[in-house]
Each structure stands twice: as structure tokens, then as C-alpha cells.
Length: 243
Length: 320
Image: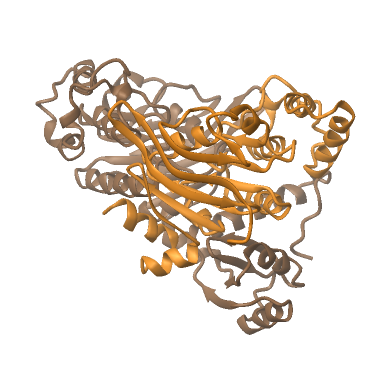
């Protein structure tokens, strides 16, 4: 892993809101093609950290680069080189499937001709050709989710941030979604993912666990289980967050 | 205690509930388990007298949900999925408000909420909107309980809540059950089914099964093999090419495997993986969990709808 290129580098990342320290000297690197699980209890500081890494919030201090760009001076370049999908799926409900794909293609500045190819390719891959002119609002949750993910990586970003992407979907759809994540990682896209499903933590290449603004643990699921003498990631998580 | 007979509900062209019949016993901790769109919220809203069914009837402690809605509203505590508190009232004000609306006082029923409310009492003068997720949840539960309801209905109280807070929340529910409250709770987390006395597995407006978690697993009757190797993505893809594979799904660090006729042995699968160049291969037969069963039932109901003449869908892989 070490010889791989770090896509995210965070050194002593600090974010304070008044007296409250939301991120307390975070140090971590995320490598190319890695599935990086970013876990922590509610209020541990995950969302704050993700907002900084996406260029939406300025840290109080620390040296941070995302996709090789500086978090203070090059936020616009960062935004062009990342994808983001939230649990709310960020699709326009009153636009059709095709319109959403074209809209995101436009926003990310994909040339018109390439955009048409991409649209065709994507509709075929997701088996949404027949639904291309349907409004997002009427689609089943599992389809929306697949589409939201595909749209988030339409511009082949270096890294995609997934914020609780699988909440509320049925167990089969949830696993199919992970097939997509693996596939993206296989293509070299770095995946930065948060989840409350501890079985999903096991699917990550490496996992960091935050507690009260700090990274308490960071390693492969295998090593974390050894280190905390736990049978699964659920036990690791409980041991870290309940102490 | 809760009796649901042939309830159906449709929104436009979408059928949210299809002919649901269900009995929930007094003092039971009963779970509605299913993903978004299963119909859990619609069913709860009908029971809470907030939504009228298209057909069918339901009663709570003998009171009809349509004709006797006033009585029902007094006897139930309801915690809807979305945060239900007044964001610009303080913690104390919220609790007093809910007590007053139900014609009681915080002092009168303090015993019941004490264990839960004591966690947030130190923040009594803080506005509800400024609380953390876990604290909001505790306040919402306190407010739903402050009039001492006979029946407590909780719509996905643990969705989006971290694994540790979820465990704490279920411990609170277990304690409330001891105080003779009937509890109906919905959740998309399959593992939480095991914490209920009985559960209904819901999918697309229908009940896949209703029973105790133990019996649901017993009835499943399929052998599940758990396999692992050093690379999960490759493991799953390779297992799916195994000639006698019915289903292959990731379960944490393992992939769960079932075959159509339950005739695949551990060493057979092991050899197959070794032959495909996997390392650190481990295969063992395991007891299925609720999630295995849910996925199995989902596949069956899909196949039934295919068999029922829905020929546009792809033919099913299983059953020849």
C-alpha cells in the first residue's frame, strides 16, 4: 500500500467551532484505488472532516491535500476532481433519468459529444434504457441509488465521497451497491465511505474510527480485529466508542 | 393488543400496503423489519389514526382506529421517523409541553421516563434544536412516554444512529417493556430483529413472514456456507460462477453461499476456491441469520411474481 500514491493527505487537521474542537489533529493518508471506511459515532466529527476534504469548509489549521490540491488555496480544483454522494442521493427529483445525467455531465464540464456517449453507456450499464424518460421522483430507491453513484463518478474523479450511501435500502440492493463500489475501486477510483452498517466496515481496505474528534484507530479490518481482540468490526467499534 | 385485519392502502398507482393482517400481543416487543418503501410508516400512521386505510380495519386495545381515534390518541405514545420535537423550545419545555397536551404533569409520570430523561436533564435549558442526535432521540422518547401510554409506537428510531447508540436504545426499550408497555418498533436494520419477541418481515407492502426471530430462522431450512479468502471482490465473483450456486452475498468478512438443492459440501467449495487461486481460504457451514432469511424470502417472492405471469421479467435462476 505504501508505494501507492496518496490521494488524500491530512496532517494535523484541526477544526474548531468556538471552543468546541470538532476535529482534533487528524493524521491520515488515503491511497489510490482504496476503499477507505470512515467510521465514528454520531457527533464524532465525521461530517466536519468530510466537508473540509470536499473543499466546503476551511480547517482551523493543518496541512491537507486532496487529489494533490491544497485545501486552502485550491478548493475549486478539488471540487472538480472529486465526486460526492450523500444519503439523500442529490438527484433532481423533477428531472428525468437522462436529464440528470446530462445536467451532471454539464456541471462537471464534460464535452458535449463525450457526454452523449457517457449517457448511453451509463443507461445500458444500469439497465435504465427503458426508464430514461421517467422522472426520478417515481423510481425505486435502489435505482436512484445506483444512478446517484454513477452520476457522482461520471467525470472519473480521483476520489468519490459516499456519505451513508446505503441507509434504508433492502439487503439485496445494499449488496448490489457494494458491487458498484468494488468495481469503481477496481478502476482506480478511491472510495471514501461512511456507514453505520458494521458489516460494511469489513468490506473496506482500511478503516478509521473517530471518537470525540479524534481518530482512535486506523488499520485494515483484519488488523483492527486482532488489535482489539474482537470477532468482528461491530465489536471493535463498540470497544472504541464505549470506553 | 393491536389487531390489524386486511388493511390496504394505495397512493396513486403505488400500493403501499396490500391486505395486511397482523396481531400484536399485550406487552410484546414487536418489530416491523424491512427497507424503505416496505410500508412500515404507512401501517404505523394508520394505527396512530393519522391516515385512513382504503380498506380493512384495525383496533388498539379494542378501540377502532377510525371510529375511536380520540381514545386511541390518549393511549398511545408515538415517535415518528422525523424528529418530532419543537426545535426552539428547550429540553424541559418540550417535556412539559407534551405532558400538558395530554393533561398530565411531568412530576406525575417522572418515574417512567427517569432512566432515559436523566441522561439529558443536565441540558434542560438547552434548545432541542441544539442537541446531538443521540440526545434528541432520548428527548423524543421521553416526550412520547410522559403521558404513560399503554402502547408505544416507534418509527425507525435507530435509522442513521451509530452502532453503539443503537445498542443503548434497544436496552432502553427492553426496560420499558418490563413496565408493561406494548411496543411496536420499525427498523431497516435486520440484525435488530433478534432483539424483538416477534417480528414481521415486510417488503413492498406485504408481510414475508411473521414469527419469533428464532422460529423464522428455523423455518428457513436452507444450508448456508460461509466462505472467506484474502480478496472479497474476487471471492464473490468466483463463487457466483460455481455451477451449483443459488445465491452468493457478502456478509461482513464472509460470503454466504446457498445452493438450489443444499448438496454442496464444505470441502467441495474449498477445493473450488483453491483451484481458482484464492489464498487463506476458509469455508464453514453456519446457522443462517435473519438477513439470510429475509433475502431468501425476497427472492422467493420475486420468483412467485415471475411465475404468476409477469413474463417480462428475467426468468429466475433457481428451480428447474
